[in-house]
Length: 298
Image 1 (cartoon, rainbow, N blue to C red):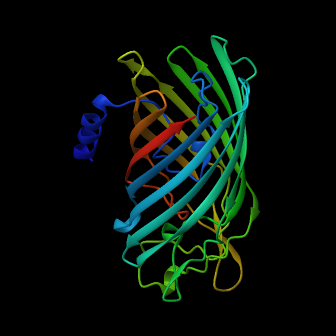
Image 2: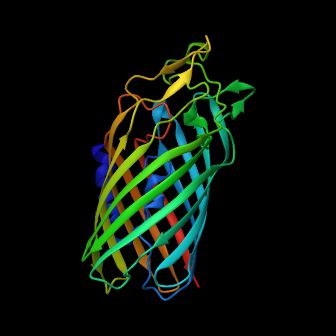
């Protein structure tokens, strides 16, 4: 862990600007991302990839593409398509993940103290029932949780500071996962048959360090995510069973850098958790994540 922290600091000494990468959650970090209304461009396309390490030496490669449209100074909307490829003791498996649709409203975009509001929905491309040779896989190997979620946030910006408060709630659960720990040959992952996930609440604080006339920005930020209740699964007897220790607090540290060259930017980010829940059946916790992305503006 000490080596990872040192490496992260060295990498980001020369890069800048924040795009909410490396967050160990089900989407809530992305929906509350800051929207830039001062660039003068109406359209942004971002292509990025995230690599990470999770439970029981599971490794991840998660590319995504997103598009944002700025309608005017107050309104914008966007879409993001994700995917995830996992490799570990069960083998290799990957697929498309989720589609995120969001809208952002900023009542006073040029105010010194600026409030903005975001709302969106997460739509899965599968039901979290991906398998390898017909063997069920834990959620750590799934590219989606198989839920349709509402995501909303309130954002406040002042000077070099940005603060976000956000909520993610499952509206419709179509999860069809069939993994049972007792039949898997390992106790590294909890049972998640017909998994049901509880809501998440998030608080985030970000500080911006501007360099080279704002061509380089560094944005260290701290994310506090609270999982509001214990998740559950259906046991082998057909009864719903809570997963003890699956509720509670996660604290992530995130360092993001971007080099902005006018009509585009290159971003790098790294994140790691300082505090995690006792049990993480949703497979979202990462020991660390590293991401690189390119954004084109027009």
